[in-house]
Image 1 (cartoon, rainbow, N blue to C red):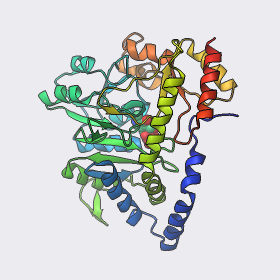
Image 2: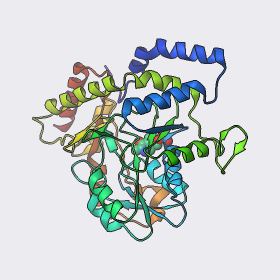
Image 3: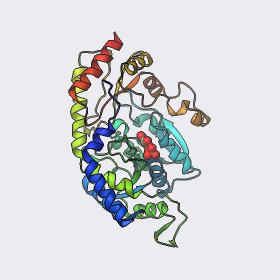
Image 4: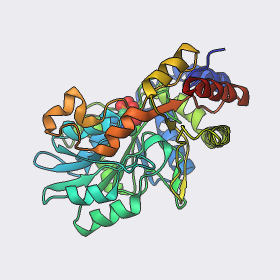
Length: 367
Ligand SMILES: Cc1ncc(COP(=O)(O)O)c(C=O)c1O
């Protein structure tokens, strides 16, 4: 019995009929760009997750870039990002024309650490991008306090946190804007690329709407220079069906995470993930820390367990960002974590039997 990291086929089985009916109606109407499906998804996303504005775009990387640009981040600006994140967070900053400035994460939750952020602020700092990594909100109060004192914008990377809250407030509602991703494996995933900008600011929302569609809200009325980063209509239909189940699927992830916690309670070599007090974690990933991680990962994979690493190389040690000028030792927490982190299979439909097998194989590998 092999166990995948995520089981998208199980999700599809639940929504197949709804998606087929939605697609059939769309094919009939031939309403392929924008249209009712996109508008309805954007509206329902706001209602379901409690975010005032949602603007669907082509993918999560574009969402972050558009959010940064709409917040007037550009050449000459510095943007503080965590050293441990998916590379797209940093790529979006670069594409907006600004300079990424890295800061270390905290050892407990691997989220952007407010102290090094404070130390990294300069007169050029225009924004901080906290990443709600693995499914929980970053320490937003401290980061916002540092930012507010100096007029710095918070742009959240909420790609891994659909449905997560901090003290009851949803991911994507803390900063001036947020980018989120509907990459298929995300908690709310499409059947291809898709993403959205979320914001509390109506003016910023309008700017993003213009930018995503050639600078126009009405056909052939181009107010600004924009480009094409529209949310695909077919994806909006899939996302609608999954949005209706998001709360239930996130709850199932929480049950599965708690089950791993208890199955691993007597295994001191394994550091289980920690939820920051005040957070509702939605467990995009269940990331443990183990000694001899590469050997353990290879043993799990050989046993048919789809474990993985998020992410194997801290940003400053990737080929793409070596030119930022940081070397080994610059971000000790992110670097140490990269040697130990291991993502275990976790998805809404995972069974207790599957999780028991994952843990049995993990314990065997650690012997
Ligand atoms: C933290 C984070 N930021 C940004 C992205 C970029 O999203 P996309 O792949 O949709 O461009 C992803 C997901 O891939 C992500 O996990």
